[in-house]
Length: 624
Image (cartoon, rainbow, N blue to C red):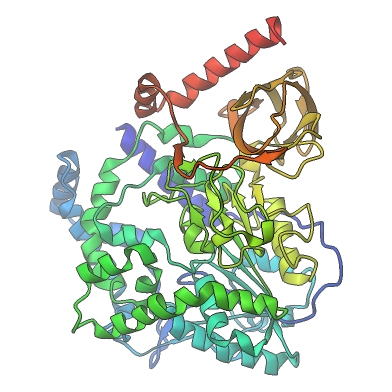
């Protein structure tokens, strides 16, 4: 019963996310604002598809109708629910799968990847796809990324914002060819010699492919790709692997960040992992594959490390030769040149930037660091430590990069291997599609798109290569005074803790350091209003080394449904000679068997929080 309640809660929350929009104001724009037109290259399924002859919408999944039809008869209901009770989801998967296939019939592709039915997009004409025209003549359904666009509109006219439309079922190269033509159309319509591009997710893969194929025409000034699926999306592999393992806690955290809830609801499902849901999705996968498996874009989404295996298992070399030819070209010819081609454009004066999220698992279970949907490696090309581990203290980054330090503070990311080592910003705990949901990423995004202020990660110390998410749902954010975010040197005297909530006040009750012998004396009577900061002095020796990682745990109280909260931030000491020589991996969770048992019960974090706070209180009273 608890699992069913948790599932219903998740479904309700998902629909709430779809209905409500929140954006962070951008108030740190400096320098000259670009007057080049902005092209929005949106994520997967954003563009509407229509039947060529009739104009009928070809893509419009009605989830309520899908479930209603699936449970359309008493016998079906009994068989489906009965199957769930005994752990057999085949009947329900068949009902849902058949309804999905029926609703998706018009977007079905042939075995060679070509469209079964003649479809078209709304328009490829720039004059009919700018914001002003769409606002005055259409219903708003062809305007993408509304929150981000509302910020862009503060700095440019509505006529200067354009929305690229494409048949997203086709492969990245097909869409990139369409984008090439569309850029020319926008240049002709606007009368400007260049454009700026904002791309997200699948749009990032399309845009990166466009830049590889056509970037040397230098018709782009600023190009910012947010969480781009350049190297694929692990969730695509999970969908057809037969091993989907939905991470309900991570999914709920994803939703919390999207809604900017100032509470910690993910604990509600920590001990209620919904194996039934996993079984249902795995049983339904063959029905999904019958539709999605012939879309070229799905195959370009396959991570390079999984592509050959998935292709051999799921595609017929004769029947599916058309899909294989196109996706082979993407994986074997276009993707391997991505870093060199993008870097050449940057060296030639084009501002190409990537904002990548890391530190989150993929909600479908793919075991790599990600933004919840796309692996960090897929977004950036950076080498990442295996999930649940980090590079050892003596790890040496793979490329020298002119002596620049390119390891993330938690030593899980080696940015020296990224497509753009000096033009990729990594944000820990940043979730997919939430660039406008936190002030740091909002400001970074707008400065990259609308100004020439940031030509690299070294342009402004306020926007370093690595940063933490400061989404309101995190409650607090910390950094050491006189230090770049997530680093510590001998110049630091205090730890600065900021309440990043928009509404809730915060009381910090304890600060615990793991990995260094630092002690913090907290004034637990001080209440931090939203946006307010406090400085906490510390004692202890900062080692004279560089490259050593440690954790800061901040425990705090809030006046909401989950009053006791904590946040862990990882820092790197940068205070002397580098540690060298060890290139293996360290586990990030070395808890005892006792805590492993508590983790399975969903109680580990609660017990550890209580023990940490009690230990801190004792030390504060008798030792510090």
